[in-house]
Image 1 (cartoon, rainbow, N blue to C red):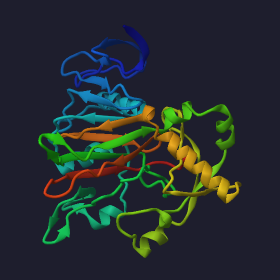
Image 2: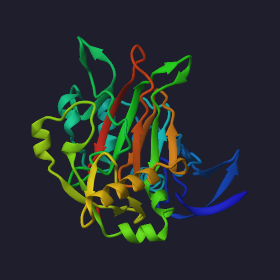
Image 3: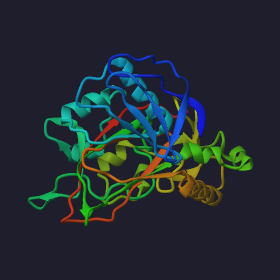
Image 4: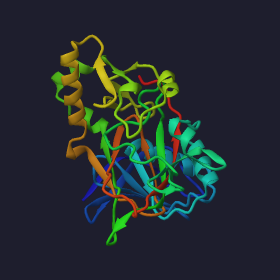
Length: 320
């Protein structure tokens, strides 16, 4: 079976035609693959879910010319989640790759747990040393979009897996991703008309957390509003931007009705049809879009099963 859709043109580290064109996708063992030929070419393999793709053959420890990076960035915008297996990168290399997507966003976690010499990188880990945690632990267990409480929520987030917990060879600590864009596409027209143009209130102080925020952090992020229906700044695709734990109400709607609507939209976004579940491997570098994608961490592990990741965040724009 063959189909045609907008994907990236032929790219390699030596040459690339960056214009988007309609390229045939060949069906092989049930999955569509966009083949990008040429020397040292890489391959985009969609997950088969509503979002997500693996980028095969790209070495993020080496130099990426502008054309190759443009191809990766297009895949990122198109699929919402992309990941690279078997990477071997240093903290400076992760920081440099992140900066290709925009200014790095510093957040509250980095002030507590960052990589020595690389303050841009937040340590995500369940490991303790000297009785103290070395990184963020048990964060993101509920569905959310990173830093949605900020005036300019980040464009995206990267996680680089250094240690992955496993049990009898089976990886633990998966991450689930939900396509808020696919959720919008599937929303009934009557409900679309009800929410489009409305704004939800996001309140940092009211969010459920594994640890309480400092008063200085609460003062830094007072309640604000964002549109319930966002438009992606690069693809112009619409998506739902509402989270049960972050949104306290909707402007112009009775509080009880607003709470019910927030709950209904939040449940709709995370329906199984819109979800990709990532099973981590050591050496994975995975990045997701914080406009069209929500995510949550699966906490099915604990010590002595160690988990260690490095996180970087890309600055974003005011939601529209």
